[in-house]
Length: 412
Image 1 (cartoon, rainbow, N blue to C red):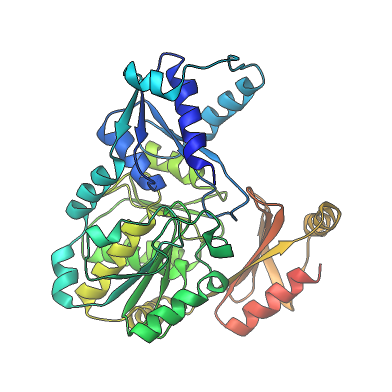
Image 2 (cartoon, helix red, strand yellow):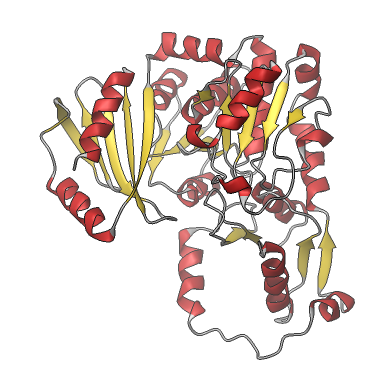
């Protein structure tokens, strides 16, 4: 509700310390902010957003000069200094700082749109006559796609800081209205982005929520087989094991990281990363874009993929499963008390010889607890980094096994 005021105050604090600030004149997405940093060769950036979290939250994201998340080492330095920093009793006003040229207007949206026009094959999308719907979930993706694909249908394309009462995270339970919008309108593809438009979700032609895990797999396949890109792959521990099989086929090195895109960003800056991603729909493709998640860009690439293969999302995933095996996946968010959370984590720490009747073959404790099971499935438990809850993740070749794994976790 007060993001604009928060942004202006942050700009005043930074500008009053002798640092020139470029402040966006409109609501813009996190990837648009990151891209502007690179295009204007700025030192850093700040994005005021709660990202995918419910409306009662807000946050202060720090971006590096390279156009991606500030790395953990930089954040540690900033946090260590927070307690010693004092804001003067009276700051120069916003108008005074603008008049002095210390705060200047920034049209970040136009910079972003012009870049996307060069990165995506809009000719192929339009020639295919694929019918596209988009849901920015009342977030910062509003007033964007219509400038790129005028024929696209857009839902929730207005500013609403309460997000209509629904958390702006592309999950099945949050996209039921959009799913109906897609099927009733007869659309071939539905693209949905979160509150700051850096995460992607999708709805297929039958109104089914399309797994962000499969989006990541489709993007990797297309980049390697059609766009002829190469490089390493960096993904979080909660990402589908199908990625490992794909990297084995393509001869690509895979890096597994703790959950949090900042860990993937580190690999992007230090190595030759083709694509990086999380299970929650955060995907970055530094090989052709910036080292940052970009939900709308990835959604448009998904449309380009459907146009290229002349196939639906369902057909494309069927081909993936035929080649790499079925990978059914679910995540469950458990809102609970600190006491119960501690009990669950203590049981997880003690460990298990089997989970839901399946023998445990190995355990990874890099970020929470992840048990690998007979048959190739796995179960993972970790605490959220942004909300007071536990997250349970499960994957197996059969959806019924996934349900049993989650039931096991919920009973802890």
